[in-house]
Length: 303
Image (cartoon, rainbow, N blue to C red; front, side, top):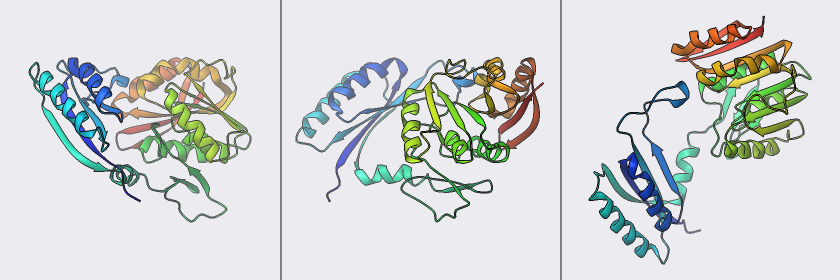
């Protein structure tokens, strides 16, 4: 079968020119736009962007009958914008279909976690035994493949702490990896909340692929949530970030049973004291603490 090919068209530009270039790419790129904002700062941790922020925009032009016309119009548009501002990067290269499919898939390989959990993508599966808990994840645009230290540690804690027929809450459910793990480890019911609707969609598709949609429900949003009753959760998993954890302390306490356990992850070490203090103010104390590289995971109980 002949591989479809594109030309990747990439430009780096000052932030105020992102919108006109995005419109140009929408009109002539024909196959979507990627906008990569400048890194080095974390808005989730309350950090501010640099004063002279820039972004990289990419579009992909299919080798179709209109290819030459579309490419020429992009060249003209970029040249005009280049007269107004400095374009730091202006590149184009040919890409075949299999190249970009395999490039990102190569980084998502099967992973053994804890005593019996295996996380694997649909395209790369390990031989397993009856004792294994297999979580099949196609992340799509959602966070959560198990390879990040925070996800890995949360899964390990989940395996150790969950009891048969527990009610579980998953805050920041992402790809659904933690919720699926909880369901397969014996939870009675799992309720997940996620602010990104694209991630909610990806998570629901993963529930179906893992045959646990009868036990798990995902809702768009965060805490508080009308679908999560007061003191309902035996085990709450919150793999988000330091800022969100400090903001949600009261609601995490509210949703947790008096005997419940909270696993809070996604905490950078330099933010640990702030998070612990916020939890203490909301009557949650640290029972266990784990550190993986710069990341900390806390196991907390109610005071």
